[in-house]
Length: 94
Image (spheres, rainbow, N blue to C red):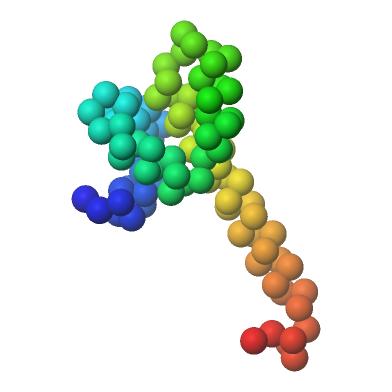
């Protein structure tokens, strides 16, 4: 599976499946996890802080929460951009 299709398929997973997938990446393919976090644009600083604050929590669960949070932020940003785009006069659009 290439990385783009993996990102798309992650959206179809339940939360528990996402956690299990992340835990599998932690133990078997850490480089792929790092790429995934980069592709989703999860804040490294925020991730490190969250893991440090909750050392006894399931890391896969914490990472999954950050991924879902970031995806929701991007969705809201796209909706806001779309609304702002509608406010542009027709003659100013490309």
